[in-house]
Amino acid sequence: MSKVDIIFLHGFLGVPSDWNGVVECLKFEFEDSEVKPTYHVLDYFNQPKLSPRNSFENVAGEFVNVIESITTSSRRVLVGYSLGGRLALHIFEKNPGLFERLVCVSTNPGFKSSDLEEIMERDSKDQYWSELFLHGDWNEVVQKWNEQDVFRDSVNEPERESGNYRRDLLAKSLLNWSLAKQTNKRGLMRRFPKNITMAVGEYDKKFLELTRGLLKEIPDIGIKIIPQASHRVLFDNPLELARVIRASIVKK
Image (cartoon, rainbow, N blue to C red):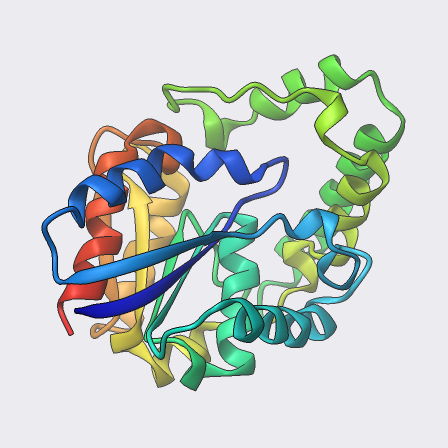
C-alpha cells in the first residue's frame, strides 16, 4: 500500500468546503486502489502566518513549514485553484523536493516582464476591488465580482456569506497577493515540467488561451482540459478534476 498526502488550496473568496465535491470524488476514485490518500484542505486565511498580511515570498516558506508538519508520507501532491494555484507555485518553488506533483487549476503563471501595461492595469483593478470588499455592501460586491467575464460560463455559483470572511483579509489579499505582484513562474515550469499539471475548463476562454500558450513555450508540461467546465472547475466538474488529480498520482 502506498500512502500519499494531498494538500488543497482554495481561491480568492473561497472556503475549505469548496473542495468537498472533489474530495468525495477522489475517495470514490481511490476506493479500490493500492494508493491511500490523506486529504488536507488548508484554511489558510484563518492562520496568521499563512494569511494575506504576508507577501508571496514570506508566506511560501510558512506554507512549507505547515505542510511538512501535517503530512506523514513521503509522497505529497499540492493542488491549488486560481489564487490558490498561484500560491501553490510559490510554495513549490520554495521547496520543489517536498512535492511529487503540483496541480494548478485555473491558474495564471504570472505576467512577463514585458507586460508593463497589463501589470499596471491589474494593479489598479485589484486596488479598486480591495476597496470594494473592504467598504462596499457585501451582496452588491459579491454580485459584481461574479459578473466578471472570467466566471461567465460557470454552471454552479457558490454561496458566499459575509459571516464566513474577514473583509480586511480579503482586501489585503487583493493587494499583497495581486497578480501584479507575482513573479513570472514560467521559468519554474521549465525547470520542472514533468512535475506540474495545469488544469483548465474547456469554456474558460481566457485561461484556455493562456494555458495553450504555456504548452507552446513548455511542450513537456502537463495540460488537462476539463470538459463541461469554465473557470470554477472544482464546482463545474469535480469528478473530472478528481480524475486528473488521481492520474497525476498513480502514474508514478
